[in-house]
Image (cartoon, helix red, strand yellow):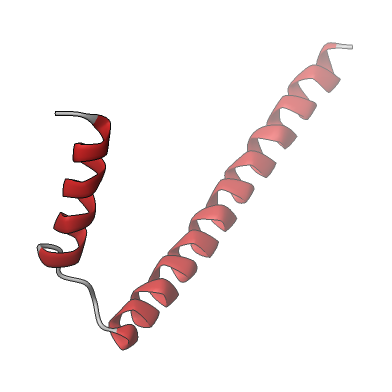
Length: 63
């Protein structure tokens, strides 16, 4: 199989075999992903802030 054949078969599969979500479902899923991304980034920011403060306190006490 050549690269060209692979690309042609990939496009054919995308066109005929893949079930695409409706526009409304795609928008709903995008909102879900955005909300969880924001929540996850806030959680990481919180953990980073706590660890940064702990490291600052630890090294501040050493000097």
